[in-house]
Amino acid sequence: MSEPIFKPYQQNQLFLLPPSIEELIAENHPVRVVDQIIEKIDIKPLLKLYKGGGTSSYNPKMLLKVLVYAYLKNIYSSRTIEEMTKENIHMMWISGMSKPDHHTINRFRSERLKKVLEEIFSQIVMLLIEAGQLNIKEIYVDGTKIEANANRYSFVWGKSIKRNKARIREQLKELWEYTQKIAEAEQEEEQAEEFEAIEPEKVEEAIKKIDEILKDKPVDKKIKQKINYGKKNWPKNLEKYQEQEQKLGERNSYSKTDDEATFMRMKEDHMKNGQLKAGYNVQISSNNQYIVNYSIHQKPTDTTTLPGHIESYKDKYGQAPEVVVADAGYGSEENYQYLSDNKIEAYVKYNYFEKEQKKTKTDKNPFTTEKLYYNERQDCYYCPMGQPMKNKGQTISRSENNYLRQIRIYQAINCNGCPVRGVCHNQKTNRIIKVSPIGNYLKSKAKERLGSEKGIYYRKKRSIEVEPIFGNIKQNKKFKRFCLRGIEKVKTEFGLIAIAHNLAKFAMAI
Ligand code: SF4
Image 1: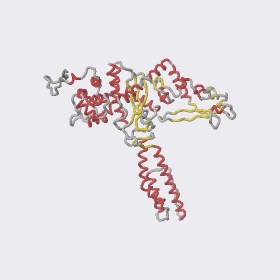
Image 2: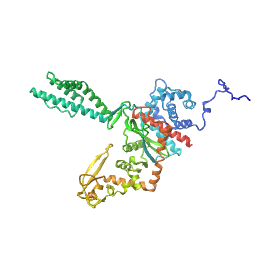
Image 3: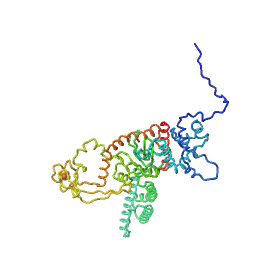
């Protein structure tokens, strides 16, 4: 039997000439793409953030390259990035053997970059355009929710605050009524008190007054306990509620560990228990599966985010996109109007667009408002039985973004005894319909565009544009939770993810 042969293994071998790390980096390695692209960008805005004097700082270009490369390799923790600068040959090459510690890395990421990353991101997108990889004229918009770095049991709910305040108001009222009865029995006169505006100072005063009036009187033990409890807790709790309401703003909830995160339902709910988690609504625009714009929102619904998202695009590129493609989650009157005002060719579906295409039950139902005949000259609709439905006035509704929507109201003259009433409507009165003429017009224009040749092309392409990006970020890059807290820092973190996604894709394309 022959002896096994092993390859030479000499751990402490000396080199005749010192090796260069450069030689160890493959020609087509993504780290070289990160290096070349960041070398080309203008980092003056970043340099402006450094004050002169004092001890020397790490080169910001180096720190930026280190962070982008770490995000490209799915490393998001500053401690692990620090480790990489000491152990990973590619990181050692790109950092020029600098070894910033995790504090430096974190400070740079969460403080300095937050002011300039969007500008850096758009410069990188412009370089990718020059390289013929994408265009920013036609964009596909979609959103996803990403968990915040917050405890899932740290919620504050707007509804609970309202409920707790109402409970204090009720109890205070009861105590006051009781006090008045006692005072009346003792033939003392007390002025009526108003507890609608339930403020800490007013409540403190009121409870003190109640205590004062009842001091030497025979009072039920439970009432005494309630007064003592109120004196100790109500003003303090109301102050806390005031602070919480300020943080909530127009939201329904926030997390105590990251008070800018809102509780929302996540798509990837592995427990499948419908539990809400603190997170952010991330909106992106893409072209050729590159990210061309990103924005972070605190409200869970996509509909309200579109104008803000397009405005952030305009900030980055100085003009609006020419074409916007998005799914039915964005198809509101307000968004159609916004896109039309900005002269953007919109291929944005609305609710029921797919159903209309499939000619389902809704489409065949002759009783829906959309199917009713409208006589413009007489400003009236005709119901399925041919009865005129006259205009009864109009209302204006205001959206979360302050868009004013005009709604006109029409009513049938007499539905009593109509043989089809059971299938036509279930209102107690004669049938009322609410119509938005502007909304209907914008929707009909959207339908026209979506049904055109271009519309069919964009609709087909939409499904392979944004979804693969979210898939890559969440599944391949395992980025399912932000590391930083607060909307500005979260925006920086997503900016790094977006740059890393774009550069990884570019590295594969060249
Ligand atoms: S129920 Fe009223 S609105 Fe409906 S078809 Fe009959 S008359 Fe017209």
